Every structure is written in structure tokens, then in C-alpha cells.
Image (cartoon, rainbow, N blue to C red; front, side, top):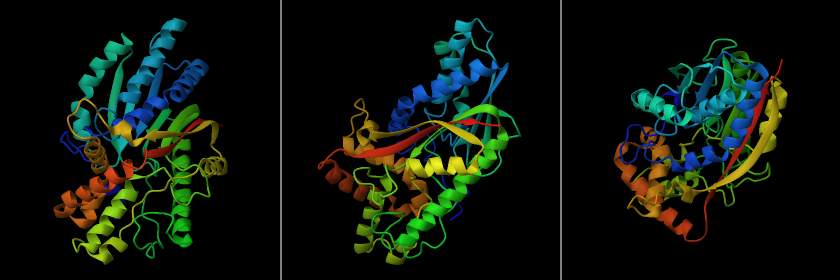
Length: 360
């Protein structure tokens, strides 16, 4: 699997697009606003920059792409008014893998600027650039960034770990995965996150800040997600049903694994400390309910809408491996499984949000 070519959310603005099925991610972004506000205010008060470069890593496409950027500029503009300072120039870098729907982003730039005028009033010049490429390598010039934000990108790894061929019946690490599979996933996470920090250490100025949010788990000793039911748990169950029905082959199922790792807070802190270029200011563990993906204004049922949210995230990877012809079957099974699980209690995601400062 060439992750850089196939890992993306569903593009466009259709019924199964990420643009129309990302309310759950918006909820998480809203919950972490105080952490971002504190970080950007701290940087501005300490440096008073004439220009401010902000990078959104794993920007995807749709209404969430500019959501955080708009809030950050609004926060800085309010601070400028309070301090009677002139607004800085803003440079916004939007990064994702080359397969991301950048065209949809570029079409929405003007509406973003109009919204910004409404919430921030007068603001400094704002320049926007798309930067395709993997954030597990260098993507920006040295000392070019002041603030880096990423939301739900860093649980994705640069590749499927090697040595997971015996993970039969699973598509990532679960309670039934062999210990060797867990170790393979953990070691790949260590390599990737360490490389991410090394690259950003060269690109972020001294005193610059990063706020990173990603899926996680509550403890190191949590081999299953307990009540934190991930999309992929349900997808795996649906695929196993389809093997029994003869729709997909068992060897196809057994050879499919996804490049995703959900670290604990201590695993995240350990890698930050080992790499040594950043200081952790704040680390928060929080939960979001799957029901946050439900929009009451739409006429569809709750389980249908949440299945569409799942499809917007999972379909591109599944199409690459199993083909487009079986996708409706996959998500019909997913909806049935989801409805059953929802009838037994609330489903949640566990997330981690860490705020970092680039040290000397």
C-alpha cells in the first residue's frame, strides 16, 4: 500500500464526501480551542511578529479546513486591538497528501476570506498556499513557521508496519492481535512521530508553537479500545461478515491492514522527551461521542448519518484494496452493526491534544 497515494478522505461535496460528513471532527476542534488560544496568545505576546506563518497539517477538505485558521486569526486580531498593535501579515500553509481534494479547498478561499472579514473585522494581508506532501518529511523551509496545527492526522502512519501478516481477522491492532503485531505498530509509530518532530524542529522558529490532536487511548495497558469504538472496529466486523457470505475472499481480508496507531498519553510524551526539540506545555485526554456526527437538520436517521461519516473516512482505503463494486455492501453491513452497538450504549472516541513549544 502506497500510503501517500491512497490515504485521503472522500473528496468533493457529495453525499459521502468528507465535506458533508465531518461534524464529529468539528466538535473535537471546538473542544480544543482554549488550548490553541493560549498557545497563539503566548507566542504573540512574547514576539509581536510583523508576519505570522501558520501551517495546518492534514488539512483535508471541506468546512473544517479553514475553521481553525479563522479562529486563530480572530484571536490574534482581538489581541492586537487590546494591545493597540497593527495587524500582522498572515501566511497560511495548507498541507495534506497529494491525493487530497485541494481543488475543493482553493474554490473555498474567497468564502473563507469573506467569513474572516465578518468575524475579525479589519485584518492584515492574508496569503494562502497549498503544500502537498507527507508531514513525515520536510515540507517547509528552515525557520519558516510560527504556529503549527494538526487535527486527526497524526494517528495515520507513513506505512503499514512490517511483520503484521499474522493479524488474521483484524485490520489494525485489537485485543485479539498477537503481541508481535502490537509491537510492530508501536515501533512504526515511534519512528514516524520521532521523524515528524525532527522535521518540524527544523521548520518551526524557536519559541514557535504546535497544537496536535489525534485519536488515542487512555492507557498503555488497553489492548482493546473498551468503549472507545473506532470506525475500523466496525469495518473489520463488516468485512468478516462479507467473507462468510463469500463476497470477499478470506485471504484478502487477512492481508489487509491499515496504517493507524492510537497512542496513549504517556507514549506521546515519551517520544516528545526523547526527540528533545519541543517542550510539552499541556496534554489533555478527552472523549467525543459518535452522536456528534448527527445533524438534526438532515432528514436521515442517526445510524445512517454516522455510517456516512464512517464512509467519508474509510472508503478511499477500502476501495484501493477491495474495489468499488463492494462498497455499498461494506457500509450496509457497517450500518447494521452500528445500529446494534448504538442500541447497547453510547459510542465514543478517545482523543489526545498536546501543546508544544519549540525550544532552543
